[in-house]
Image 1 (cartoon, rainbow, N blue to C red):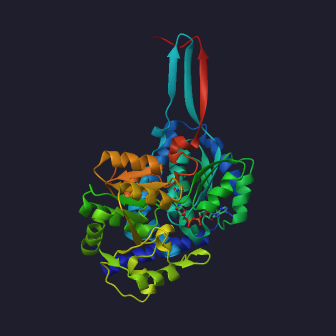
Image 2 (cartoon, rainbow, N blue to C red):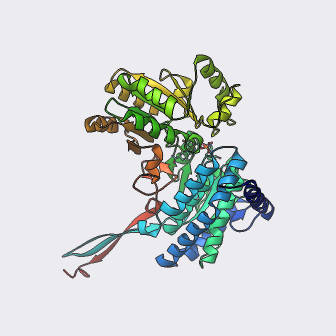
Image 3 (spheres, rainbow, N blue to C red):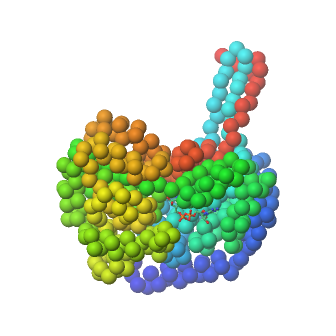
Length: 461
Ligand code: NAD
């Protein structure tokens, strides 16, 4: 357990690092101009592309160490700067990036050999990749993208979310420190002191940027896909969690609330609403209220919450990523720290249900039977094809849902975060290319396929 002195010491260290980031200005990958950043990343890529795979892996290994060493600083910095999320959960997310983001082992070769020789498909770098990153997982996305893109032999220029620039640029500095310490080039990852829409436009039209990876809401993905460049579009979701009558209802309540409240619901994959079949809906709600720290919002409270968290222009940014306790305080309700989620029952058209809120408000829609539940869940996912979840022991039901909802991620009988390797099998990513179909991105996503053909030789079978 930390005592007050320990906490004071940590706060001092974080403030010192924040100041360092502000004061140190440009250098270590940070530029005041997008054209300069791209030119520096291009020079670094010329060095990286002639390094061996083993040297690339050494750089990645050093990045992983730096992330682990700085996980707490990154987490505190992000919460302090953006006002969003939960420090403990952000520490876990940063560690997950360090431990489970694939490195060069993801770059593989396909070979055919036979009478007419030997043909290989090799994965080569694009060059300098442009990356646009969100404020919801700022350091996680910068670090995860950096590992994958560098493993693929690329360097990267970020145009991060301005509301998370200190945290994002701190992460960029860590990547460059790691590269230099491991014998790699500086500017292997670059960013701007003050990113703007203008600087992202320069990136999107620059001749030396062949590929852009956009992680964020619908606006940025559409902008990138309209740029004329190849784009990887990791867009918005609104993941429904469907619960049928065959599920372990008590466990479903626990998994859903755990997933929904992780980092105050900031992850794009997190449960954003429930669709429950009528026969188990009351039982599910009861478990959430009695065992999972949920607070039931009546009609009056739902109206107050709607007026507070949604504005005519969309989400009230001051509410995104805030805890249930903080959200309730905004509408005049004081609760204890045990309350971690706000729940209620409503129709699918309820604004707090149909909108992607990114806060621990979880509406439950009642369905008359499984087919009705699937129809409602598909409607709520809005065709994003991003993520969905189901709690069921009926494989026919699971299969039917999987085909109907057609998402990049479908978690069965677990919390949403098991989809990114946290309590589930598989690797980690913070860029889920839902719109463009690459799905969970990794180093191989950031490579070009090349066919390399040797005619009539080198087949020794
Ligand atoms: P956001 O869309 O406000 O911003 C994301 C990034 O895009 C920022 O860097 C922002 O400056 C930039 N941007 C926004 N509009 C732009 C435009 N027209 N042209 C160029 N750049 C533009 O999103 P956010 O609030 O930072 O993040 C939350 C959203 O991102 C949610 O919708 C969430 O679902 C989504 N998201 C998706 C993934 C995924 O992997 N699919 C991961 C994280 C977040």
